[in-house]
Image (tube, rainbow, N blue to C red; front, side, top):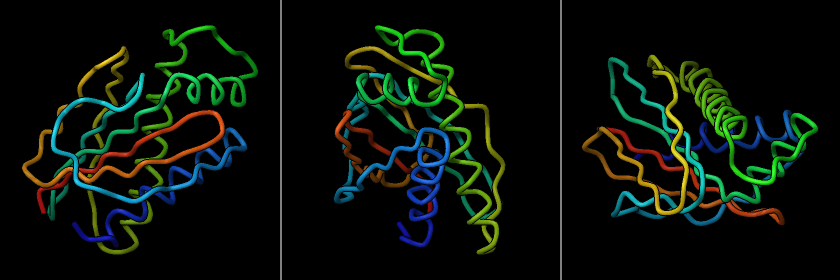
Length: 154
């Protein structure tokens, strides 16, 4: 997968979390993901379709990180992953994808975004509806970890 296509999602994640939660995550080494098991407690998944390609993006947060982001964004800290936290993860997924869409649009890639789906719970799975490789990029912080998965046909 083209790095020119991946970097806008990474840039957008740090932009969204930096702006909305005053939080910076450190990107780790990308790798291919072979299974569908999420590596965290709550995931947002969004599909994208355009004339050049189709694919999806997911963002998975460990519970401790999701709760910290909730505290920083809304001033309240639930004791567990609840409906408000899953709504926040869906909105973050939407904002990250929208930011990446703008960056990619400037490079000639156009696509439409679906409505994000959020899944939570230990051992939940993420099903990308694309035939391409699944690239996983881990992110770390003192509050917990997050992972972005990107999967596109081309």
